[in-house]
Length: 104
Image 1: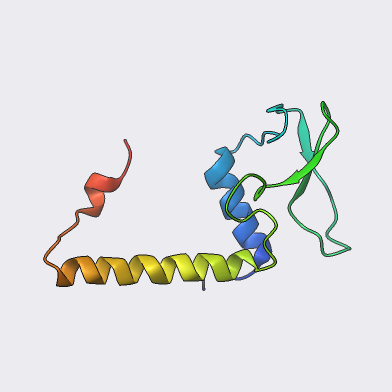
Image 2 (image 1 turned 135 degrees about the horizontal axis):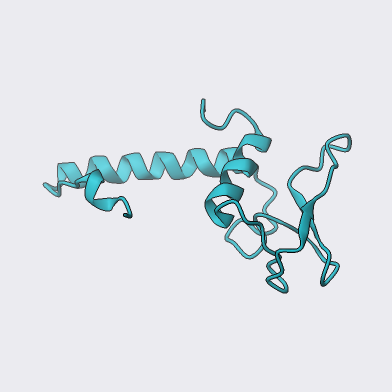
């Protein structure tokens, strides 16, 4: 997957999608948070909340919470499922306009 060559790229993409550039604690909804620097240990994507003192990941509170499967594999599976569904819709005569699906 070119767009998601590693776990760090997947996390960065998911953080942008989920938080629109403004990270927020899923426990207390505070924006007084900072990213932990744990690249030396290989643990990436963890955040600290300065208000409730919890730690969290971008996957907290999502279907990916607690998964042992890398986001790269999840994204690939979702892409595959989406492509297959689009092909099935076309086979069934259901035509989609991707421009109409985009939010304004």
